[in-house]
Image 1 (tube, rainbow, N blue to C red):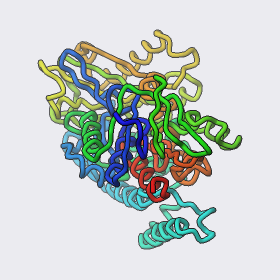
Image 2: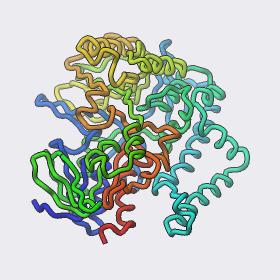
Image 3: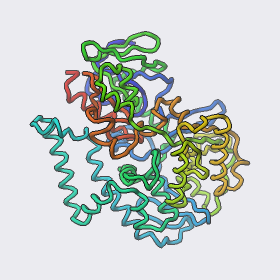
Image 4: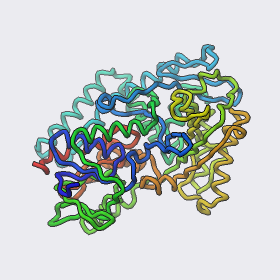
Length: 517
């Protein structure tokens, strides 16, 4: 393989692959360097020797950018969401439709439809800011062309906001920085419907629904209308398609090669040194790692003291664990039909339940009754398992990144038992169906993928870590301090989830900056 490229991308997660494909299609020579032996990062499949394929961590698509999705050719299925209720009166939500799982009309259906419509319209409005770098107001007001583009984008946002009407504009400004608990319970009773929305508002975050700004993260999750999609072949099929797209465009991929450092001469990147001591030369380097990791690869000496302090203090405490189960049969779920067991199942009986689940994590403790997002992908895609077995994929929130006494075997056993006990309330006899079980804590996820703190978004999606201050003030537009060095992962704007937008935006910004001209 050649060791001389225009651009080197660190990490073959979805953002790294999207960035590589974007640059390769622009005629640039690109190499993706990945420590693992397979692509995907947090969105990869794991395949065992006994015929079981399962999503290791991420298991659903929420916000994949439409222009990226159209190029992949991966079949996906839209899943309804079912909020499980302790009394068996489960609720089914899909788009703006709400009803009981047994088909009976829900008394809050009309209120929910209005609320969903409003939030998705707000999400579409904010989504205009996701397809470009954050505004560069301080530098741009002097008259630079980039500043004019930024002001034009903000002007369009303001115009579209005004077109919504005075009442909706006021509502948007009122709730944007609010907490989701109050906003939801202003409209809904504190039951499973509010619980599902509250859980989605804090999914992947170190916050509860009463935390300020949690409405923003709920709106973020609704960026593509709130549609929840299951890819056929698992998330690994999406990563394989992204890999193929990058390779077909001309990018080279180098697996099993971790990066030890980024090489810099005269305050300009010249390539990377791999962990085996070999070098790959390039005029630009894009990192899909966390912001602090990206800084350390270049060396703190290339950044001023305040920037180093800010990068080291980016908040990225992961709270989501993953329980992967192989079942000999699908358990009964009283109140659901056989077909409905294939939906996205959410254990969050109320917004208060979600808040109570978060409270122990503040003190390094395990939630007694965690918030769970469950899918059984083999009910929709039987190709993932043979011999009649099934996979159950469970995202568990909230688990501390590091409990008070560490992730001892006892702590791991307690966490798994609490997840299984919570599931058992809704799926009697589940434990009797389990053939294999694997629990991944946030610390495990960090070790496996390099995600800072095991955090889904590499950094909290909080108001003080968004737009012009994501990841930190002065480094929000992908260019990362050293000429030719760029941040293209989830800690860059607009954030995490499998969207591909940070990778695409970073690659386009690199091309606009003329570094490779």
